[in-house]
Image (cartoon, rainbow, N blue to C red):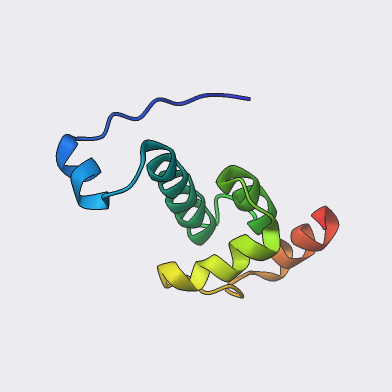
Length: 83
């Protein structure tokens, strides 16, 4: 497991108005969603990065305006292999 430290400006912490733990979870989820949207991670790998089951991750994509089924045939085959 790798650990990445992200420095957030105080204004960001104030704007998010949440605990440090919740902030970390939100940043992880946002990164996972974006990497999935860009096609850099499969839905399974993105869910692992976000720290949640794949089904929950797929359900959360709508909160970020990301289509759940915007996958190529190769990506669908890879997801089926990883299921």
